[in-house]
Length: 46
Image (cartoon, rainbow, N blue to C red; front, side, top):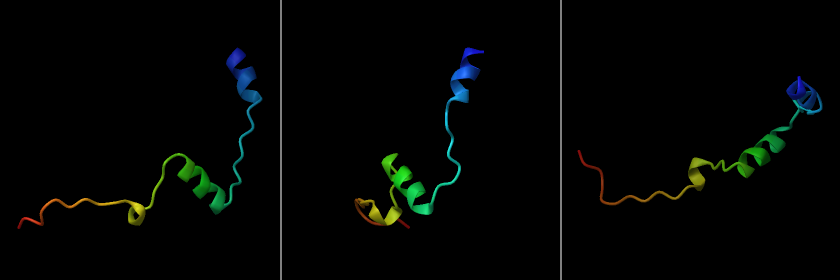
């Protein structure tokens, strides 16, 4: 019952713009693949 009371005070925002979603994702560590460094030791083995 206490948890229900605490959770009732939590405001959930369902309307976020695309830029807000990207800002939130970046703050959590998201990166685009083209922003990541790739280390290639050697070459491709066929």
